[in-house]
Image (cartoon, rainbow, N blue to C red):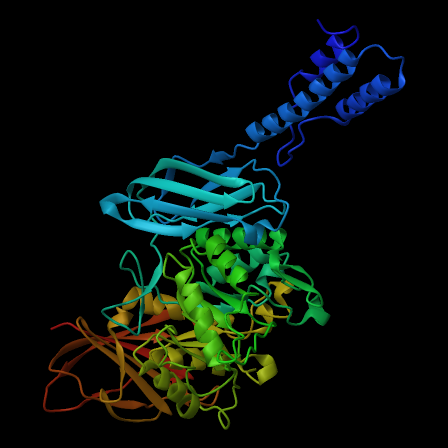
Length: 583
């Protein structure tokens, strides 16, 4: 029998613990601890009652500590939450929550791995990521490529131990089109999982991740038929002017902590990626913009870059499941240190279970950067050039540079074009630049102040209102991925400065771009001599400045032995001609 005054205390000590708040490991209130201390003091300083009382108090106290530890362990059992259904090519996210706070750095001390088995025996291995500063919350993302039933097995190694769980979910068919891949049949083109081939038109949006008006920016791009946005995951360009600094790590640029991550920034990344996906907009995330990793020397043992590997791993674990990524670009305009960038690219590839394309970029040149490297999946060039034909002529510069990229057996991509500060001020000439690049068989980018220091203004730049007519022409009226630039279709021309041509054999369609270099110049009596295969051709004229076809249509009959003369209607600046073989 317990001594008087002790029974009440022990009953109190054994009452159920209060359920802690989410993310907390508290299992005993401060008042409980004070009461224990009070009992100890009373037992030590009060009148001597018996040794039994002291021993009983000690047993109760030790029991309280053990019960508290046990209750803490029970409450620390993680809770797993996930949807039972998901659409194909949408993100299936599993959340593991209610872990005890980590005493160290959960971003590097923990490892969440997932094994997914899907229809037809397909297996995917991927990693999850920590989404709380104290290590109490983790997520793992998977994007199903096929409809059907999936099974997953997760293992989480964390400072408190190892947690395993399994489950099932079903992926339903959807309208989504899938990830971006190199087209195996046409290796200079990009293709989606469902076999479709969007005509990608890109726009620079450097500060998108720091903008308050990012939804409006995405909406405006989508409304103008721009379906790719290029931005920095780390960028402080124009900081003195607009005060935007996108910083994905903890700490600051002056005193960075590259081993931890700013979760508010990464959650905004998620919001932007998701919203863009819903609007049908694809993305070009640039991993480094202001930060330069000029680790000179692989051979001197500076690599691997242990400081940046957690960033790359976290990046791919968190963002890699989004299907609306065209490619990741390692650096913006940093064409040095090939060994380091090769190492970074290969690491990113290993961390990418969905095989996202990787590339990089250098400053303005007339050639692609490192097209010979296997990891560099695109032939990328920056052409921050002007609308002055004496410096940057349509044929002598724009077409020539585009053709130099398109002749590489990779997708050519002019990833940054000139804007006002580069002297690219004439909107008519700018329109001609983009049509010229289209005729040269490369993807290209629209670059303006609106995507840089003026991003909060949400306004169109020069020629952006007519850029919207380029993509619909190729997607609606041609099978553009089958077409190739050619110098043999046009035998000669007069009354116009240049004629650029593209042709496809199956079906037999050809496109001519008639263009005068000087803005405002007219062509009233142009003549084009064409070497067309024998047959009857329908001819239609498309107005690049308005996005409409002329009412005038005609038929041409070509014979194999003779060139045929086309006499287009009068036009100002430029005109697109679509020829369709009818028989």
